[in-house]
Amino acid sequence: MLKLYSYFRSSAAYRVRIALNLKGLRYEIVPIHLTKAGGEQRRPEYRGVNPQMRVPALVSGGEVLTQSLAIIEYLEETQREPPLLPGDPVRRAKIRAIAQAIACDIHPLNNLVVLQYLKRTLKHDQASIDSWYAHWIVSGFEAIEAMIAPEPYAFGAEVSLADVCLVPQVANARRYKVPLENFPRIVFPRSPMRAATRCRSRTSRASSRPTPPAKSLRRSNRRGPKTSRTRNS
Ligand SMILES: N[C@@H](CCC(=O)N[C@@H](CS)C(=O)NCC(=O)O)C(=O)O
Image 1 (cartoon, rainbow, N blue to C red):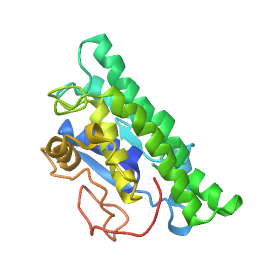
Image 2 (cartoon, helix red, strand yellow; image 1 turned 135 degrees about the vertical axis):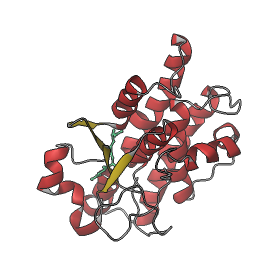
Image 3 (tube, rainbow, N blue to C red; image 1 turned 90 degrees about the horizontal axis):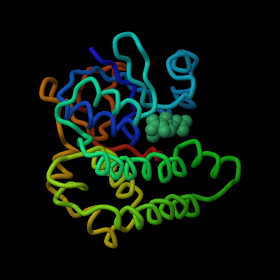
Image 4 (tube, helix red, strand yellow; image 1 turned 60 degrees about the vertical axis):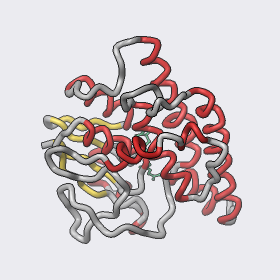
């Protein structure tokens, strides 16, 4: 079975959970708590899994794969149905552009290590950090708003890699109370987006959504309670 090192609040891991569930793949989650006890991602055991000390990491056939977009493209190549990238190269490039606008341009500026550096090293207060966080989402979303045309998904009638990346980024924006009323296209496809957000593995019925892990260290696709105060991306 596939094994996903994941943190419930990680939007990068959330992308992979959505892709796994859309494709109906069975997987076991190994929770890596990013803030508890200095961050489990920094422990030597996990550093051995992913030297970047970040989630997600996917173990498939004994190989460790990292970087959410690389993992999703691997899943796309090994489990084509349902496709997250269309056959047409132009549409594929446009979908990848949205995925990269989120994963390469917005998210890295709001990642946990960045927020911790702003707080602990540069001594910014929480209000400035929240403003930083909102700024990069808003400027990124302004561009993305002009690049998609929900019909009802970001690029047509079928869910794509763009939606797989948009859903977690919108969830982050909502968690930080970033105003989204100027982004009707991004938030427009409410029911289909919700469907993608909540999509469950056909085999395991695991939810992709950010739910904290159960008390046990290791769980296999079980849902936990709903809230936590920890802030990160
Ligand atoms: N580009 C990477 C980003 C991975 C990443 O930064 N994950 C965050 C959580 S969303 C993380 O593990 N952060 C650990 C830390 O900041 O210490 C990907 O797409 O997988």
